[in-house]
Amino acid sequence: MEEIIVLGTGNAQAIKVFNTCFALRKDKEYFLVDAGGGNGILNALDKNQIPLENIHHIFVSHEHTDHILGIPWMIRMIGAKMNQGNYDGNLYLYCHEELISTIKTIVTLTVQKKFYQHFNERILFVPLKDGDTKDILGSRFTFFDIKSNKAKQFGFTVTLTDEKLQNTNPFNNNQNKLTFTGDEPYREGIYEYVQGTCLLQREFIYSR
Ligand SMILES: [Zn+2]
Image (cartoon, rainbow, N blue to C red; front, top):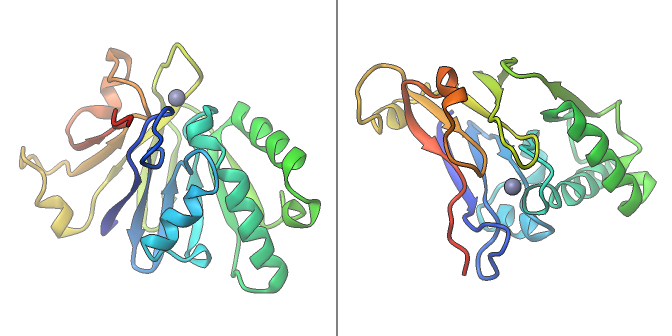
């Protein structure tokens, strides 16, 4: 991964800033992490010059409104591009198993079928279990359950390969790990995943 692009920094009650979500870039491709609470995701991507055609991988951490409700918009817009022949390949959505039915329910209730007709053909859900590893955009991600007591939530850890990002490692311990722990504080139970992290990212608490 070569760049981290912060798309939003707000919690669920933020009004003046978009909800927390970000993208990781590798060459021209992006890995989107959560989608905020609505169609503000489209504006945030546009402002950061991230074309929808270059997003083929999206991770959804959990079911709360401020993380999931941008997803129907992403499916709506990418489904339209697929219909127009303006989107190459498949869209992969990574999330824990229970979240798949939640997303499918929200989308099928709120989006026209012609946009989600690609479910299970070109819009593919990738169910995640605690500790699963996936190779995405040339990096190995390990996804883990953050042990939330509110709603089941997953985070991930990934080793950075880019020199510029590696230089941000204050410990100089050659681990070069970026870890995302969702919108909750660190818990003891996730130490095995978080240890050696140089960049720990979790939800900001800016709420104005
Ligand atoms: Zn939450």
